[in-house]
Image (tube, rainbow, N blue to C red; front, side, top):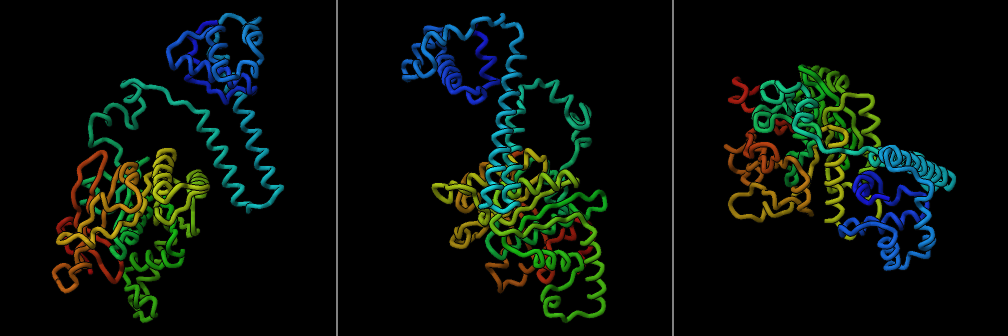
Length: 429
């Protein structure tokens, strides 16, 4: 009736929104004509269908002519589009529910797996229903948290989640909602320790604690809890494991345990977790808690549902999925990653580089921040002057500077701390 209206329709409806296969084919061919900037009418549409040998399958030219019989003038197109989309959504919900019923009856998967799959499919339906429109500068400022004054005055802007490390916070402004932060290092550099230290600070910050979710694909719940308690109590882990503790250490351990128990830290040590599992668990947690940080340890141990051509493609899928998940939940994701052996094979300076990220360049592409943990004492063990010195190298930051934040590493507690010159006092041992 009016092919100039097709642009409006094509931006809101796709072929799958129609229930009849014939109508899906007709709409797809109309879309092809629109892309080529050709006029859409009965003749051009019939010709396009003939090119794909689909004209007879949709009912022939007679059916095309009959499509607009009895239709009113297109004055209320938005309402018609809304009706089509709503009916399409109802059909998809029916299909998702039927698929869930079939899985329950067959019983090949566990109840938890079926629940996670159902939540994921319904969530995707919700995402498909929401449409993001273009916004003007005025709308951006009006919806900015804190209003125009906060937008124009950096000192009044809502700060990101602090890490507890002053130099790192100074460089990054904290971890912001929707950011994917990659923390990478060679084995034994302390990346898990640093991530847990940051998580403890977020969950126990006296200025305002927030919940932290830790997905550990490498260590058990007990091992992670032991690390956190010993770091909080400043008790030597080796002495703790062997049981040689004096009275003062036992007292500190009890106090540290009490602090950790009260902190909103939630740990999941499921082996082989995938995006669907993490997504479902985080959605439930976020509904109950003020979620401030998600830690994943570590990326290369995650799995992808379905088949992938190679491991590089799997890692690309995972890094992109984690980035989208952080944006959807509006929570920063601190994701740990392995590095290749390139830093160790590099003569002279062993500091890692972005090119050392293992298995996929898409990690660097998807991340808002890439940080490396580096301790030179690992390579120069005879040099006592390097003992306890650590660097967090900020190699990439989408919205800020790069550089290096120097920290102290307390071996016996596997704990990173600010240097005394950063806090203006003595570093307690």
